[in-house]
Length: 304
Length: 259
Image (cartoon, rainbow over all chains, first blue to last red):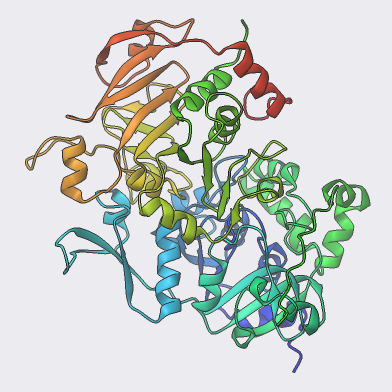
């Protein structure tokens, strides 16, 4: 049965108040901004955000008051620096106080991997002796039962819902993702509810022609949303490049609360949907971000 | 010869890379240092990028982030973060790069908070992969803006452990890393806008190895929050060569990261 859903419908059904949401899992590229903006428009509250770094999307959700807890390694603006809304929330409880559960990129990946494997924790030697180890109360330290060496135990983190942006999917949620994967696969396998946001909807035959490129089993997928340019301003390999200027403008405009509110009105709250957002970007900007030179892979042969 | 302090930092960072090494490349300046090393003295080095990328040629365009599409095209391997950080965790990274807001004399780095944990005066972005890179790299190179409030006796928060601190259980340095169970070798270089420090692994202390053209040991001391120790051969930093500057400017012609 087709899982094709509108973004409005997918967020309304699978991201209720208080849920834990893994999003922005491929690090800098493939960030589901369209999904994040719909979460803001639907005024979700008390969310827990889960992800490694979160190139301005977590900042927007925090600034809009959707977030109670952040389980992440990094919240900022990769090409610009600090995240102003995150700062205001932690330093001044504006618009509300938030709880942070500090991770590194490796430990948040291990936490999702543990959940994906159905085990309570995964041990690592990372972060030993750091203040991250001391300030994240979920971490435990133990001697290895095998050789006595110190180990940090990273407990499983199981998201209620994982939102992943992909290049292409069929209507059942069989999807191709390529480029650097970040922790997308682990986050997909760690949950029972996945929302896929796809640049293109293609036939089942296209996906099944290359099963090695499939991100995970479609039985995890609850909703497939067709949203071209849905990851802008982040990059989608083969579709569009990162809009560095947009990150710069966001950084500059959100220094003050008023500036953030104006930015939010302009780019999120006054946009009925993603089509309006893409129209606002305009032809010229879209063209400048588009692919200049295609680089197709050689086909692989699954013959027998 | 005319060059910016960022260009000089890129050159110092690049010189840390030895030919044939696996380099865990961090954000910003290291992206250019990797490209520079590849095109000059270390043509056989390999770059590991935490988004899930392994490359043996620099990207053909300047990167704003390591996840930009030019860094994916032509890579040796695009895969998961856990696979690439797994290589790091298993000791495969000879050299790792990180930057930060504060560093102390023992090479401990802070990118989390300034002030008190519960009521910070500045909330910084956090670790990203930095704490992992500092935990696991065989040698760690730290890149920092050199200001007195950034180079401190002790950082407010140890995001990325360097050589720890001396205490009742023993000294800072390699011994501290062994005590807490960190497998990587610890900081080897601290590259700043004013100079280059190496570290004494016995006690973990930073030692000024060279100071950049146009500054003095006195000025470096003024901008450093601990009493400087000098290496025996402390001298002026070898300036960038014409070749090094040409490669940097070809890669970053607008000076996005190096102006």
